[in-house]
Length: 212
Figure 1 (tube, rainbow, N blue to C red):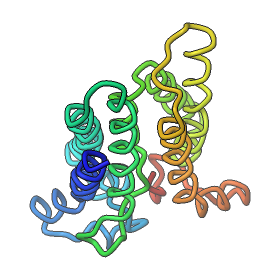
Figure 2: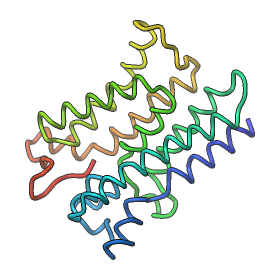
Figure 3: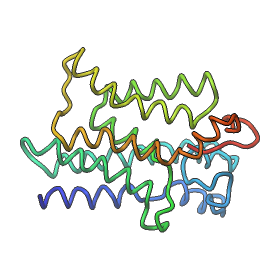
Figure 4: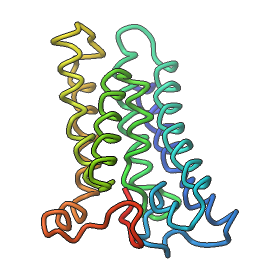
């Protein structure tokens, strides 16, 4: 149990590092929270006009999630590994969404969720990423792509186990993490979902774009 608390603390602190905010502040002397949607994620960072800062934000946000799960996995041993890794995944995304450094005003968790799930359930994560890419290319709605990719992830985990016999985990903590992380992403996208339903959501690449 102590190991789980340590893993949770490390994962939360890693996840809460606001890379988008820091990169824009350092390289452009701007507060990303005053740009576009005010989100600290990669899509909103792109709106500063710097593609490389957006890409770097994406990679770092995904990387911190991946690292959080790897560290959690190495803290545990035996049958506890998957549970501890799942806790690390959940708290890393929670850290990004509710960072202590920015008084809880964080990102929407998409890139960090990709990182944690690439470490926790890689094949399912790649399929979810494929959903994200396809939907983005077809619609240019990053928010819609994020919602569908997050929603599809638990399905891919289930299919990997049922069809391919790849069992990443089946305990309650693992199952909870595969459901709660997508749930956080969906909650953070609730305003985007409302705009999608009303036909007022912005498309990626347009003059105004909503961050994922």
